[in-house]
Image (cartoon, rainbow, N blue to C red):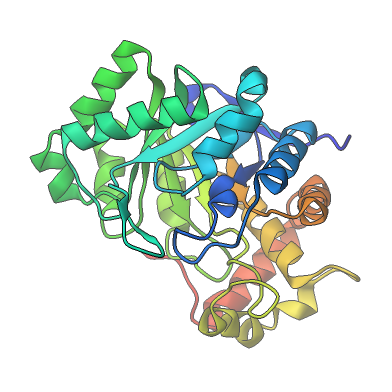
Length: 304
């Protein structure tokens, strides 16, 4: 088995593999046009994740079948991985799909975590994250106090926020969140400096979108965003035989404060490919610096 690099997830002290698993990929078809995922497929990929040594799994209350599958297939292996989920949505049946509007109330958050614990067949999660809450709703509902209440009860170990600009900077300044989940890749660098700011204040950093959802066609990436890749001439920096997606993953791993980046797949072969890339580690320092220089010149730079 390949030995994966581990990082300390900020002030939590948790030692997490720098390659994590995004379990949104086993959500099924009712949420946001997800791919079909049978019980057998879910069992195969989830156990392959843990068998590979990955010890960080991220999901959400509104990720369709994801939490049910985790409970069904990984509950007996609960001591082998750290489990993160999210709260704040209210799943509503809408015929051929489910809607997931945000409901930022104490009652809904408590309902979310209760449902999540039941579905995942566990009595606690390591991390509960607000799912894209805005500052006003968080303050109005006194929602941080709800997470603190859940921590005191033992239902959660650490407080988190899955967030982005314009709210992220304020949440960092509050100093109450143990972990932030932040979108970032070579093709979406706006939060690059905020990641550093949060980490320097002691927060753990989970990066999502680290491979920009893959190339359009082969993956689900946005064609306009991938145009940045072409404009920056990043192909010239790839190693022989290295795919574009592999280059992006290594770019993400090169951020000095990337504690873990969650990459999802249903395909065991793709999982092994991701593991092989992660095992190579960050880009060489000179390549990373040149990639950032080229991206700056192409107009893809961090927010000030």
